[in-house]
Amino acid sequence: MEIKKFDGINVVPFIDIMLVLLVIVLTTATFIAKGVIPVELPEAQAQSAKIEKKDLIITVKAGGAIFFDKQPVEKRQVLKRLQRYDRKQNVRINCDKSVAFAQFVHILDALKTLEFQNVGIVTEDG
Image (cartoon, rainbow, N blue to C red; front, side, top):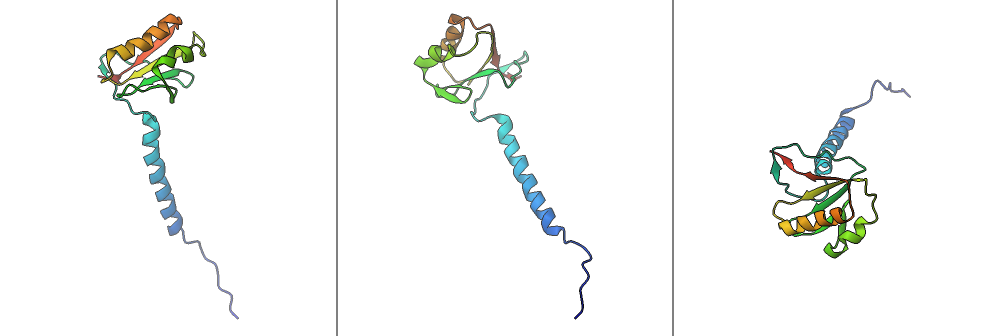
């Protein structure tokens, strides 16, 4: 009985799997970078506030739905929910450009009532 020599490993299947994984990672990375809540931001000439991980992000979608850090909040609950946060915490407002101005003012009024100190508006760089 003759023993066969093991000269090498066939790496072609390994390369195929790695390329498929690379495509999956690159595809999902584009969705993660945009965020979960899609909002069409208004354009501004001035540079927008930088968002950090510890910031409270308030998002208002085109239909008027309000989210605090991706958690839905009813309009009448905004003031009550804001009371849970520290007044010195950075707050960033993402507001879709098609939302009525009254909705935006409602959020700002709640922040001003509770005397939040660091409020920024997120916009598209124009």
